[in-house]
Length: 334
Image (cartoon, rainbow, N blue to C red; front, side):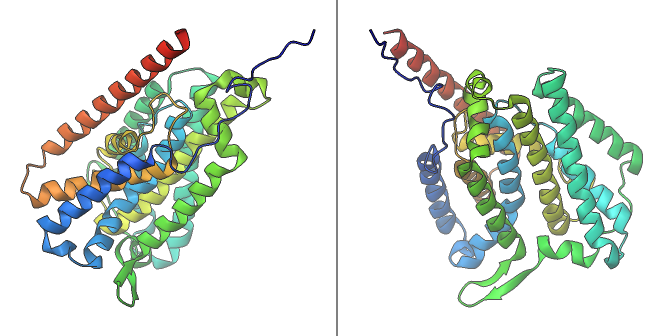
């Protein structure tokens, strides 16, 4: 007698992330906030206002892509804010106004970002230290290193070529000036979507969903999680280039970004713990968060409320995910 085996999700292989998974709700919220912006401020009555919003949101959206890779694979990266600060401070010190140094310094920033991500990934996967602890430690290490190096007052200056991407733009008929940062963001978005639709991206999601199934399928769980941290470090380096150009050199340029980006990702419906979520939704969550803060600012609401809003979003997202898991277990039991 032949036994019929019903395949489970794990046995069917890695779960392919869908573009629309979790995207609908956050896009609906984003649309509401954008409409509210149009009514609250005259600057949003033409495309220039929304392009300026994209320009401000671009660093956070790029960071959200990197954080998405880490969270969807089952981890956290709390070091991105401090890494952004360190990258900007390093760039200013090394360039010091020298235009000819711009290209090699940007290349160095990408290498530093990848190395920090690699260290986070290797300690997490090889020494089995929880990523929350590892990246919290890296946050403190980077903060301390920046303070010791600068004494709290960064030295040097960024070149005009370095600041162009984050500050300047190009003219487009009807739209006006389109920031270079928006063009860079578009390129990163396309690359992220293509990556997640490929085999490596699907495996990354599967690691967060069911790492045992990945191991049985011959995949490298440790390698995938380390890759996620490296990509997060690279995204922080790109965000640092944009923020350095837009906001200038400061020892606080990346302060609080780690919490903003986690808030943005969970607002986009990405489940803490891994295995669920869309990279497009994570980016939409970042844009929604930036638009929401802009709306609160236009309404004259205290800036201190931003932290409260972030906290509410994180708690609500975790509670919603826990409720969903509870209902799923109940259905399986029945």
